[in-house]
Each structure stands twice: as structure tokens, then as C-alpha cells.
Image (cartoon, rainbow, N blue to C red; front, side, top):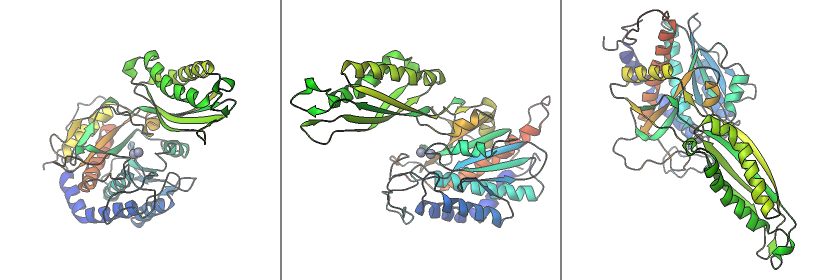
Length: 413
Ligand SMILES: [Zn+2]
Ligand SMILES: [Zn+2]
């Protein structure tokens, strides 16, 4: 196994399929589908996998699919891509702009999906040639943005028998051809909080006879984040940021209810566990001071993605092996949430950032913006990287625990 010319094999494979993969990505990009509505996307992936003799299995809700490659007794490695788009309007002027109003692949999940498809096609050829020392499970996960798709995959048995799991995400701050890696937490917890306030409404001439609900809501909006930052260890970087607020309908009428919604992000698990009770207590004290009733709805989102050290080593070996020396660069923990964290609570693994920026380009749109796009050569990079990662993890997984560390990929011969 060792000493195979993996780099050369990938070159030949990509020379044949890269154009087709880019076309596949553009088709997904033009036809984005929201969380748990990815029927067309699912069908297109399933068609491509079935066409080469694989047997993809669609998840019970009808979107997302799982596909096993290889049948040996060796270890099982899972590779995950998310397939859903966002409720964001496409603002790009490109031939493959979204054709669905208000929906686009602003998070690059079309790219992740295409990379996993490409890696699956290559690995299936390896399996056919008897060169796959174990199994690779392709997880095409729906609804990452909701979130919740990861739990759907797990409920369908997607992790059963899996020894290690890997995934990646587009990163427009990293040059194409490179991957950003980090041991330990790489994303953050992200929860959703909704606050509803109510009180007797009335005329704005007489706030003292009612509860001045809009004023109280405004106090809640500013006091809660401020007080929280004084109650929780600042190193946890817990932040409460409001994204929507609504109250009232006329300039001279105090409304009897109002609502605010926001997210709670946190780098650290301990603070994450303490947050809901603390926010509730602060809310009650501020609301009480202004005589309004307040209710809180706190929805747990995703835990932080915490990369396992050995898995990160495998990612580094894979990157340096097939992308070249210096291809892996350090990255920082972000305050973004990613539901890959759910998988890592069950099995070891790691999540990588895939560079998508054209080198030298000063401004490349950020994810979740209608202007976001990638340098499409990142697809070939991603395929090389995911294939090498899966093979590295399979080879490592087979090695007896007592043996000496070996060079896993002698790529030059
Ligand atoms: Zn996203
Ligand atoms: Zn994403």
C-alpha cells in the first residue's frame, strides 16, 4: 500500500473528472435548496453514485443520503458534507447564479457536496481495484444551517461502526490550495434565544399607568448582553447578539407585547452550560424593574467542534502529502456554529477549513453573504485532501498499536 503514487493517481483522476465536478457544483449552485428540502440535490447525488454501482441510501425524511464505499474488514472512516443552502439572495453576476429567489449557496455547501462526490468516485475506483484497506462512509448531510441534520444522520445509524470522521468547510480567508487546521475547539457553541415581553398597553401620554413596554424591551436588549459580560469568564467569549426585535404599531400607543430574538455564542463548554440559567435570571430582574412580564425560549444549538489531536495529525499528513509542503496552515477558533460538533461528541475526528480565496485577491466575499463565491480550483484541492485523509485514517487504523510510526504516503515514487 505504501509507496503508491497517490498524487499521480489523483492527478490522472482529476484531469478526467474536474470539469464534470465543476459543472455539478454550478448546477447545485443554480438550484439551491433550503434545509430539509434538498430533494433535487439528494436525487442528483444519488444518481451519480448509483451510476458507478454504489448503493446510496436516502435518509428517512427524504433528503440527505449515506453511501458506503468498500466492503473490507478494515476500519471505517466517515467523510461528511452538508448539502443545504441559505435563505439569502444571490447577489453575484455569474452564469451560475441562483435561479431561486431568496435562496443561495452562500455557505459553500454546494462545494462541500461536490468535493465529497468527487472523493467518493475516486475511492470507489480504489475499492474496485482492491486497494481500499477498509470502508469509507460518505455522509451527505441535510440541514446543517437549521441546524439538526447531523442528528438526523446519527439517528439513521450514520455513525455506527465509524472509527473516525472528517469534514471540511470553505474558508474565504485562506488561499486556495491550502487548508486551515487546528487541534481542539475550532468553532463555537451557538444557541438561539427568544424573549417575549408583555404588559398592559396604553396611551404614550400615560406610561406610568401602563408598563412602558418598548422602553423595558430596549432595556432588556442592552442590559442583558452588558450584564452577561460581567457575570461570565471573559475567556469564554460568550456573546449575546440580537438579530430581530419587534414591538408596537403606532407612534402614540404603548403595545402590550414585544419580541426579540438573538444568538448566544460561546467558545467554552462550561460557560455554554451555564448560559441559559444566567440569561433567564438577568431577564427576570430587568423585566421586573419595569413591571413587564418576560418569557424566555432558549433553544440549544450546536456544541463547539472540538478537533481530536490524532485526527488533526492525519489531516496534516494528508495535506502535506497530496497538496504539497506548507499546504496546511494554522487557523483560529471562530465564533461560528457548525453542527459537525454533534458527530465529534460520539466519535473522534476533525474538521478542516478549505481555502477558497484566489491568491492575491484582496476582498473575497464572506460566507453567509449574497456575494460569496469560491475559486473553483478548490474543488480539486478538496477532493485530493479528502481522499488522502480517508486513506491516511484507514492505513493508520490498520496499523497495530505497537508498531513504529511509519511514513504513510511515500508519494514521490
Ligand atoms: Zn453556514
Ligand atoms: Zn456552512
